[in-house]
Amino acid sequence: MSARGATPLRCDRLVKRFGDVTAIDRLDLHLDAGEVVALIGLNGAGKTTFMRLALAMIRPDGGTASVFGRNVATAGPDRWRAVGQMIETPFAYPELTVAENLWAAARLHGLSRSQAPGSVTWVIERLGLGGYADRRSSALSLGNRQRLGLASALVHSPRLLILDEPTSALDPAGVVLLRDLVQEAARTGAAVLVSSHHLDEVARVADRVEVIHRGRLVGELPPRGLDLEHAFFEMVRAADLDATESSALGGSSEEVH
Image (cartoon, rainbow, N blue to C red; front, top):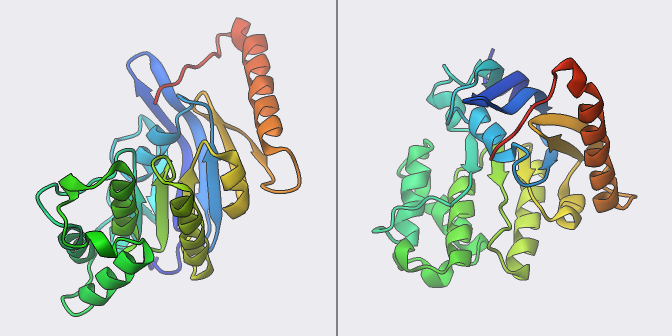
C-alpha cells in the first residue's frame, strides 16, 4: 500500500503499562486525511502517552499503531517524512539559531537543499519569527520556543500533524495564529491530532472531539453547538461512575501522563 493513499493514523486496541499502572487501555482511534481531531482529558488521562505511542517514541504492550498503512515499529523514512509533531517540551538544538534549527528540521524530513530555503523562509514568516531568525534557540523566550517547535513541525508541510498542548506557552496572538495554521493544514489534506486543555479553542478548529479518561476513549463530543466544558465533565463523571460500578468485577484501571 502506498503511503499517499493510506490512512494517516490508525490505532487499534493500544495498551501501555508502566509497572502495575495501565496508562492506555485498549484504545482505538483513526484519523482521515483533511480531518482535525481534538483529544481532550484531565491531567493524567493518557493524552501524551497515547501520542508517544502513535509516534513510536515508546512501545505498546498490546495493540497496534500505524502511520500511512505501516506499523509504526517498522515504518520507514518514506512514512515519517510525512509526519510533523511537537510532544511536550518543544525540541531545538540550543547552540543553533532559529533558522539553523529549521534548516535541520527541513533536511531531516527529506526536503532537498533547493527546497529547504523556501520552506524555512515561509515558516519563519508564518510563525512571526522573523526578528529571531539569527538568534540562538537557547536565548528565546518560552513563547518563542513554542513557536519554533511549531515551525519545526510544519516546515516540511506534513500530511500527519500531531501536537500535544500546542497553545500552552502562546500569547493570544499565537493562539489565533496556530488555529489558522491547523485549519490551513487540514484544508490541504493533512490529518491533524491535537490535545489541549483549552476546550473553547478546540471547538473552533476540531471536526470531532474525543474524550480520553483513565487511558480509554470514553466518548465523542460535537465541537460546536453545546457547552463543551459541561458536556466534557459530565462524560468524565459518567465514566467514573461506570468504573465504580464495575470495580467489583475487578476491572478498574489507572492512568499516568
